[in-house]
Length: 458
Image 1 (cartoon, rainbow, N blue to C red):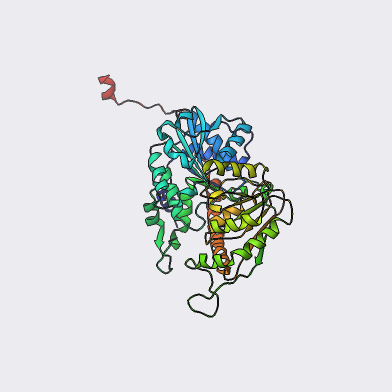
Image 2: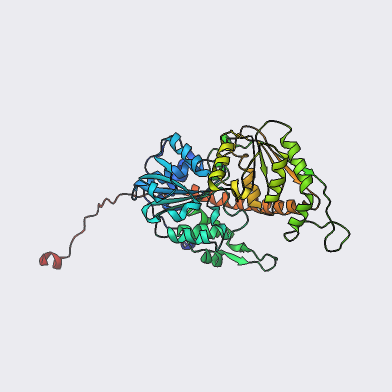
């Protein structure tokens, strides 16, 4: 293809327009790849920051918030999941940032305010010049109330960031919501441009059109930075190699009755999952307790339901139980207690504690109940298996009769996630490898002459 024509076509490719400012010098506490991400995000103004767990996403957010607040009205807001706010506050203070956790609008002031998503209705969005959504996977709910509220509240803000370790591991519609929140492109337009509703599958999920894959990820790279390792963006990643992850499956047997009048116990599906789980709960609770009580190290016990948590709690004395029905204050206290090493065992769900928390002090966890959600599984494991973890991480899965199907589904989704990360990695390397825009000051050297009729008129 003619090079001029190829350049013409590349110029027609959709790209996000920058709306930010030139960044100030980066602080010493940022690694080279982190400085690159922050500089890009400040220039872009509205950007996605998708760095995997332990790559310093919080540090990048804090520096971005500081500089963008200074470039606007002096105030930035970071919204976080439950119990993550205090963790971010501790890191911010240790690095010298002017940041504090707030519970409502009356506590906000200049600098960086940090608040939980559940208190969004107590804030005045217009008083903040910059907004960052920590663990922005909350936007995955395509028509969810919180998603719509966040998009509407901050639609006019010049500086917006969505930050998460796992943008849509197998649901590209979440990426549309990230783009929608940032004002880059409406989710519906993104789907129409690059995706097709796959009627060949029972779920009829949206998938990228075969010929559009490179174009889609190039567009993503024009407004976001994504990496599982700094090497994904062309930086030295040797300092960020993860320790060994050991996954052990423990088979238990419960008194599972045949389903639908058959002779054998049915494989677990979305419709009969809880029926099978209830019939195997005693065996699973006993297996989990034997693992946790075998040593005195910290443990995370992951459950999928409250009735599983009830059984585990009775079998593990002294464990802190964090569930949906517990008040916000008690949840924060229990999660903080475990994070600081004051409690040895915590029993909770990935949907409650699976996002944002740093539990590198713990290298043992057991799943006594899992759902078909790959993202919940991934996020739960990454609370401990993350950069900064100094020991091998042991993950135990209690598998009861009929539950093998859950593992097969998660393995399939894991393969989808790996393929997505490969495409993201290639796009990032293309984007980072391109020469940055250089603004050359205008210095005219040509002396023009006015025509005679204009000279005479003058």
